[in-house]
Every structure is written in C-alpha cells, then in structure tokens.
Amino acid sequence: MATGRTHRPATRSRGIPEATVARLPLYLRALTALSERSVPTVSSEELAAAAGVNSAKLRKDFSYLGSYGTRGVGYDVEYLVYQISRELGLTQDWPVVIVGIGNLGAALANYGGFASRGFRVAALIDADPAMAGKPVAGIPVQHTDELEKIIDDNGVSIGVIATPAGAAQQVCDRLVAAGVTSILNFAPTVLSVPDGVDVRKVDLSIELQILAFHEQRKAGEEAAAAASDGAGPVAAARGESESADKGPDGDVPAVMPA
Amino acid sequence: MATGRTHRPATRSRGIPEATVARLPLYLRALTALSERSVPTVSSEELAAAAGVNSAKLRKDFSYLGSYGTRGVGYDVEYLVYQISRELGLTQDWPVVIVGIGNLGAALANYGGFASRGFRVAALIDADPAMAGKPVAGIPVQHTDELEKIIDDNGVSIGVIATPAGAAQQVCDRLVAAGVTSILNFAPTVLSVPDGVDVRKVDLSIELQILAFHEQRKAGEEAAAAASDGAGPVAAARGESESADKGPDGDVPAVMPA
DNA sequence: ATGTCTTTGTGAACGCGTGCACAAAGATGG
DNA sequence: CCATCTTTGTGCACGCGTTCACAAAGACAT
Image (cartoon, rainbow over all chains, first blue to last red; front, side, top):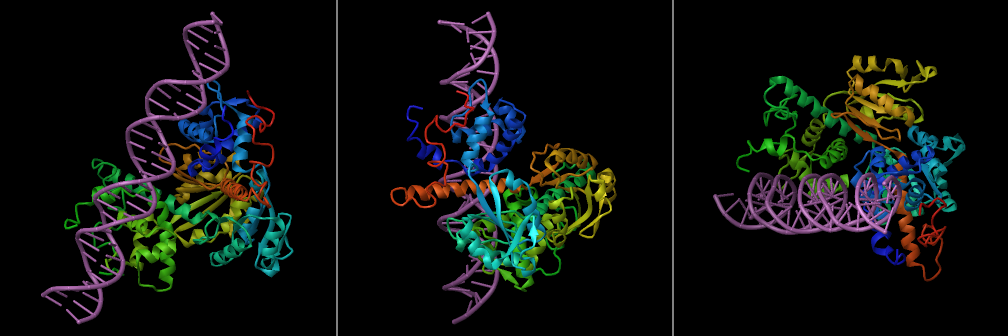
C-alpha cells in the first residue's frame, strides 16, 4: 500500500469485468448469511461453495476489488460485506419506481427483497385511472401523467417496467427523458435506449423456453439410449429421430418456401 | 456445400451453443410478431434489428440449426417459426407446477406468457393449509403433501419455485426426487441439484444490484468530469468522495482485521 | 526465531462467444 | 443465357471469461 492513492484508475475504478459484477450480489448474499451467524472469517473454498461457484473464480473476482483477505486464514466476513456493498453502491439509498401495477407489478411492490438492500420503492405508477390512489403494498398508485414529476421530485434513476409489451417502449422513452438511466424490464419486448442507459431484462417465458430446450434434449437422449441401447446416447440426441423428422423434406409443416 | 448431407453429425446434432439457445426465444418472439402481420420473408438484418442483436450473430445462430434461408431473399417467416419452435421443444405441451403461491407465485400463475407458448400450469402448490382449495388464476391450490403425486400423475418435468428462500432447497429436493429435471428458481438461494437437472434462476434483487453498480459508476464518472467546477447533484453520489472513504484505512467500518 | 502449513493472489493456457469480411448462392432483369 | 445485385453462410481473428497450478504471504507451533 505504498502507493495506495493513485493506483485506482487503472486497477479498480473501472476495471471490474461484467461477469464479476454479476456475481458480487451472490457473494454478498452468502456473506450476509455468514455474518448473521456471527462467523468471523471464511475461506475462499467455503464461500465459493456457499455461492455455488468455483473457488478460483471467487478469488479472482475479489482480486479485482483489491487485496482483502489474509493468506492462511481467509476473508474477514464483515469487512468483505462492507467492501462489496460499497462497490455495488448499496451504502446509499436508491429510490426506484415501478411502472405497470398489474399482477407482476403488484408482486414486485410487495417483494421484500428490494427494501432489504438499499432499494426503496419511491412510487408506483399505472396508466389505469381507476388504479390511481388505490394503495398497493401500502403505497398509493399514481397515474402515468405524474411520471415525469415523480422521477424529478424523488431523484429516481432506476425504473422498473412491468407493463404489457405494447406499452413498454413508450414508458421507457418517458422514463429516460425524465432522467432515469437504469431500467429493469419485465415486459417481453426489446427496448431501445440511448447510450449511457443500462437495461436489464427478465423474461419468464424465455427462461422456460430455455429449460424446455434442455428438457427435450434430455428426453431425446434417453429415448435414443433406450431405443437401440448400442448406438450411444448422443446419436439421435436431437429432434433428429425423435418426433417427426429425419427427412430434409418430410419435416416441413406445409409452408415450406422451396 | 456440395455434400449437404453427411455434414450433420458434427455441425448440427448436438452442437448448438448455449448462448445461441438463449437467443432463440428472442428470435421466435420477433418472428411471431412478423407472422401476425403476415410478413412472408425477412432478412437477417431486419430480424436482427427486431431482436436487438447483431445480424452476423443471428446468421451464425441460424447456421447451427441448418441452412434455412435463401440467399438474396432472406428467411421464410413461417418456416423459421416452425423450425425454432421445434428446436426449442415448443411443439409439445409442457406441464409445469408452481410451488409457493405467495405474491410472486400468484403473479406467475396469472402470467399470460406461459400459456402463449407450449407451457401449461398443471398445478399450484403451497405449504399453507389455509391456501388449500383456494383458487388462484382459476386453479385450486393444492397442499405440499400432494407434491409427489401431482408430479407423477401429470408427468411434470419442469418446476417453478417461488417459495421463501428457507424452503427452496427442500422443495427442490422433493421436486427432483419426484422426477422433475428442470427448475426455474425465483427464491434467492443457491440450489444444489444432482447431475442431469437443469436450474435457471431469476433474482430480482440481484438484477437491481447490478444496475446500482452501473448507476454508481455513471454518477462517479460524471462527478469526476465535473469535479473542477460546480460538482452538482451527482458529486457525492459515489462512495468515492462522499461517505467515509478515500484512505486505505479510513474507510473501514470498525471490524477491520489488520 | 525458525520451520511448517494453510490459503491467498495471479500468471498463463485454454475455450467460448462475437464480429468482421468475403466468397458462394441464388434471384432478378435484360 | 448471361450479367448484376442482394443476402446468406462461414472462415478467421480477437477479446473475454474460466480454470489450472503455483509462488508468495502470513499464521501458528515449537
């Protein structure tokens, strides 16, 4: 730590890989659990197991933050909790607005996981005039007309979109114009935003479709293995010989171009 | 490409990269929209724009599926919808169960995005006896005791966990033991499962924390840029120069090891 | 004080995913 | 039938992320 002051720009300030950032909350959660059990220190091996990752990966991740941790001992839990919290920006309060108070929006408003970290639901916004004033999770819903004013008054920089797909882009544009620079999108649409605005999307349907793909593959492999029990499991692993396939022409529904 | 017949084993059979699989639902959604507007064909450039990806990436993704598409013209929309649907396993019906009918579970049960693809909510399961029989989204909630029987009777292979974190692993174990091989986990916990079981997780809190990180960084950069003059509202946004930081020793809460 | 033992921090190799750039393929018009 | 023009499919290079493996660092016992 002789330098200790000017080494930040290159190494720390902006050098944290995206993949590492995405894992920091995972570590933080595991560390918080340890902290509540009053565990003083933890080794990379133990913590990695708790977070469900490789221990080498964890150590490398932490190395981007700095050299916390003591060789031969491990990491000081409380110290690390603080460092990661600070790195993630959780030492400050982040007001968020949720736009679209339907089934999902209401569930999000009630979700306890927000408040537990530094996130505070500053307002709920919906386009339906009938919803206005109606309290959800103890917070009165406000009409979309107030959106810009709400953002401005509360200094909101993070917005959550839980509207139907058709309204998402329009809501997004208004949020961005009002000053929001980070958006969490639950609507099944691709949002286009200007540079400098971050978007993360959560799409339940997509997750299930990915699972279905692997599920189908597993079923195919099983079927192939049981079929001729000699051809090897991967021989017909795909849709290759499973459903109605095989022929380059035979598997076409009816609308084939050629 | 004169051969066009024997190149399959290596190229197609099992070779679809995970990153490509994760994008297929995106393409499918964009294609479905085009299909509803009766657009007959689409170029990689157009479709890529609609899906929010690079056109070269899209073409490479499709090349893993096969050589659909006509040079000089583009891709036949209906044909591609069918091919991707088949690849993802959406031509068959996937019964799913949702375990944990709280705020989130109820919202998921009501979510329309499931049924729109090949997913069917076969049952809702909750540990609270008071919930039993109560209909949510038109489906009566069943008690956890029935879990194994439900899975077995309906041939369920995909389970959705929306329980509190404390119950998630136990529920997961029971689902897996009962025959479920794909799990979508909304509980903020790391699930451990045996080989052959796929888990995908959706964690709202983590997504927000990642956004907060970037938000903090943006504020920090702005502050650095405006450091010389007014400093403005974002000057103290970062942990950097605001709270208790800067010195290698000064920024430690109280429990520093050294 | 010295040696041993544990655990971190990281250099280096590897593999995957991305994007460029272009040749091949086919449509279209003359 | 040939030339031109559009768009696909892909070889190649590059960069990021992961993993291995080990030297350096420090705790701890003697």
